[in-house]
Amino acid sequence: MQKYFHHDVYLVHRIDRPVSGLVLFAKNTRSAAWLSELFRSKELDKTYLAIVENEPPHTSGSLVSRIIEKKQG
Image (tube, rainbow, N blue to C red; front, side, top):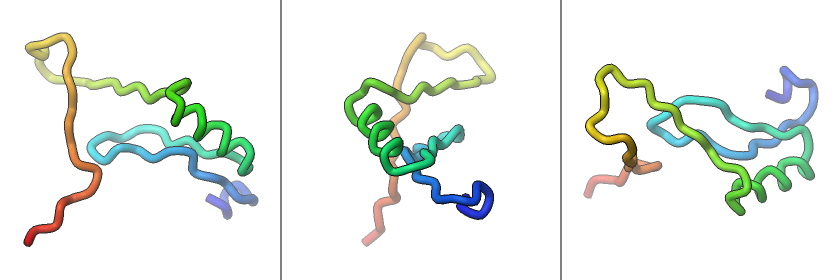
């Protein structure tokens, strides 16, 4: 990213493992801290859109998945 933008960029949040989408970067540490605080305080949140083949049985639900794989043994 640094080569492309010709200056440092700062990761603000990550993408959850079972989804794809946008990643938010900041141009400086001040902006990164501000945006991170908005996520932490729930003033800014992530929205997920599911594209499905058939009509789901319920109008809402939850996707529960581990962020990291649990080691065997």
